[in-house]
Image (tube, rainbow, N blue to C red; front, side, top):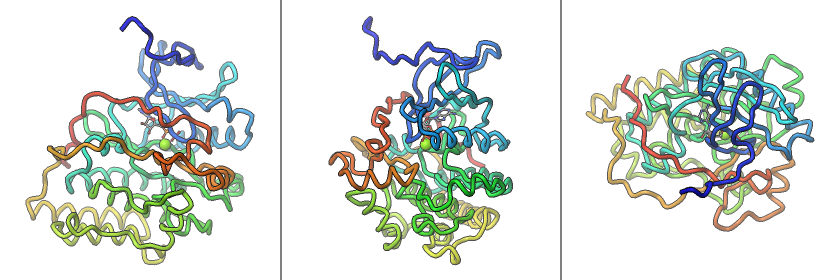
Length: 355
Ligand SMILES: Nc1ncnc2c1ncn2[C@@H]1O[C@H](COP(=O)(O)OP(=O)(O)O)[C@@H](O)[C@H]1O
Ligand SMILES: [Mg+2]
C-alpha cells in the first residue's frame, strides 16, 4: 500500500492551468488524464500528445485540429473542449471530464447490452453526429471506446482526433487519400479511400449498435489488413440467436445503417433517428424495454484492443510487422503507444436512463 503504484512522471505536473491527477484512458493518439483546474475548482480531462509524436508535424497538426474541430461543437452529447496549448514542450487539450466509463469498457464488463439500452445509446450518439454533420464535421472514428457513458447515464461522444471538416479545405487536403479509422468500424468506401461523407459515421454507428447487441467484434481477422479485407468483402453477419428474437424494425435499422454500398445506406442522421425511433417503439410494444445491465452474463477475461489507424504509414508498418499473437487487433505497436495499459475501472455506473 505504501509502495507507489506507478512512477508516471505526468502525475502532479501542470499543463496550462491544469494539474494532472491520474490516467483515465489511452487510445491511438495519446493519453487522457483526470486533471484539476484550481482556478475554476473543476475536474477536467486532459489529453496529452505523446512525446514521440511531438517532432511529427502531421501528428501535432492533427492534435491541434482535433481541438479546433471539437471546439466548435456545442452539444449535450459531445464532450466539450475547453482549451488547447503547449506547456514545457507537451501539447495538451483540456476537455469536460465525463465521470463514468467508455462503452467498450462497459461491454467488456457486461458482455452485451439489452436491445433497448443499445438503441438508446446509439440514439444519443446519432444526435451528437447530427450536430457534428450540421457543422460540416465527420467524426470518422465512431466506436464504443469513443463513446463515454457518464454515471448519471448521459452519453457523450469524444475523440475528434480523426475528424474531418468539410468546410476547411486545408484539412480536406491534408487528409485526402489517407486511410484513417479503426478497421472493424470502417465503411468500405473509407477503406478504399474514396471521397467519404457523413455516411461513414452512419456505418460505424451501425457496426457499434451491432456490437452492443451481440457483444462480439465484427469482421475478425488475424491482422489489421485481414480485417480490412473482410470489411470490404464480407457482409456483416447477423447471428440468429441474437437477431431472431428482436423486432424486425431493429434488425432493419442495423441493416440499413451498415449497407456496404453507401448509396444503399441511410443517407443522413434524421433518417437514422427515424429508424431508431421505430426500433424503440417496436421494442416497447414487444415488452423488450429493459435498460438494466444484463446480469449473469459471463465476463470475458480480456477483450482485444482495437486502435485507430491514424495514418497510412502506421497502416503500412502494422502490415509489415506481425502483431503480438495475443493481441491480434492492436495497432499500438505501430503507433508506439502503450494502449494495453488500460487501468481497470471500479464500480459499474447505472445504465442510461430511459427516454
Ligand atoms: N473527457 C473524458 N472524460 C473521461 N474519460 C475520457 C475522456 N476523454 C477520453 N477519455 C478516456 O480516454 C480514452 C482515450 O481517449 P481518446 O480521446 O479516445 O484518445 P485517442 O485519440 O488516443 O483514442 C477514451 O476511450 C476514454 O476511456
Ligand atoms: Mg479514442
